[in-house]
Image 1: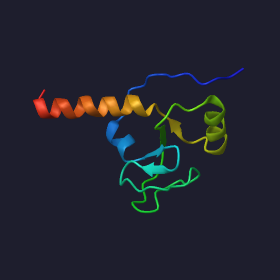
Image 2: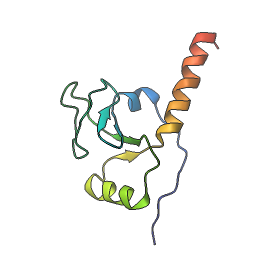
Image 3: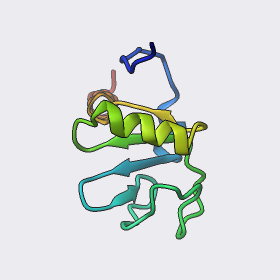
Image 4: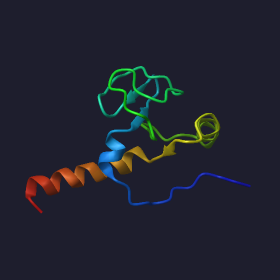
Length: 99
């Protein structure tokens, strides 16, 4: 039996920022240019042409939804959007404090 568990990997934040689709309750958004209303099956952003490699979720995604997404888009890497936002915040704070 297979299931979804969170695994921590060190990833390039700039790569994620430029290739992330964020799924909300009503619509999806390109994280790069913030275009709203993108279909879940889209491979690229219709505005900035960013190629989606990562998918994050504004709310906790249920396993049955994750399974469907992986079946429809097996190439996408699913990330924890909250972890991503926290890491961006730490990076930005270090820049401000010059650490």
